[in-house]
Image 1 (cartoon, rainbow, N blue to C red):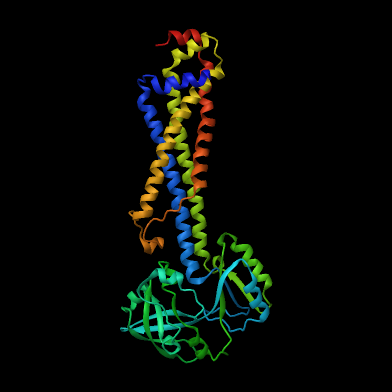
Image 2: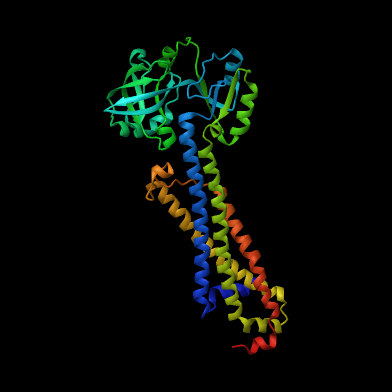
Amino acid sequence: MNFEYFIAGRIAIKSERTFSKLIVRIAIAGVMLSLAVMILSIAIIKGFKTEIQDKVRGYLGDIQITRYDLNNSFEHSPFKPDAETEKMLKNNRDIEYYYPFATKPGILSANNEIEGINFKGIDKSYKWDYIKQHIISGTIIDFSDSTAAMQELLISNYTANRLRLKTGDDFIMYFVQNQLRPRKFKIVGIYDIGVEDIDKGFVLGNLNIIKRLNNWKANEIGGIEIRIKDFKRLKPISDDIYQSLPRNLRSYSIEENFPNIFTWLGLLDVNTKVLLILMLIVGVINMITALLIMILEKTNMIGMLKSFGASNWSIMKIFLYNAAYLIGIGLLLGNILGLGLGFLQQSTHIFKLNQASYFLAYAPIEFHFIDVLLLNIVTVVVCLTVLVIPSLLISKVSPLKAIRFK
């Protein structure tokens, strides 16, 4: 039988605590709250980053290919993809799908209001899966009817509110050229992405409208948007595609296109690390306090064990076993609290956010088993390692004085 483990069990389970009882409970509560906060912090930050990335990726793709020139306007120069580029895109296993697009600046005019906007032209190959999830009114463009598709348009809820428009309304859009070119459109759908830079910057329409306005050839486009399978490999995949393109084309990733958003998301990792360290410190301080109180309370027992020949290390192990027991209770309760609140938020979205400020209407949660496991392991290892220091106080206890201690 393990002598230290047996004594620690008797202290932890059957010992009648006096003034240390409250301190021990506070220590357990400290570990519980620290772990719960750490679990929720990582889950919220990861969920937040995933949701924001999906919003930007869903509308603008992961990588855009455009013509290489000195044109810095919102309107890309036309090009015709060559056979080698088409082959590279089709055979690249990292690419999920791709489609052509073009953009052209314009001015929306409705209800005595005007709004500057970018008209994003797409064709029937466009993937509507993401937009369908965020349509709050109406439907998507019907490319099966080529005539009707030339007049159909999707706008954001932000733009609709600004111009007091709704699904089914008609309005005039003036395209910016040497001479303003008016076109009449009908709103078939209103979507709400939740990212202001996107919602106030774009409307979705037929690519052929831009081709006609710019007198492009039938096979010319303004660019190609690419969706990759693994966003974590965006940088190497983007670099590989760039190297594979002919000299007249260039590519840039969504992180390069919207650096402000992705820089902000990167800063969230720093905030998470600071919060994790602070919570771990809180848990450690609580456990150190509890251990010192337990040592002080059991000074008489320490003296007796030393008089019976127990070594300092053996006695230290007794208190470390007891501390591990308390940490274990705190971890169990912390997991229940953290995961419970997380799953509650996932199912009910009870904790809301200001979408105008955070791009999301509620706090997102994204749990990963490996994150929860690592947090538990790190908490145990750090706490027990640090608790070795206050347990060294046992070596200073004199058996004779300790037995007399009351």
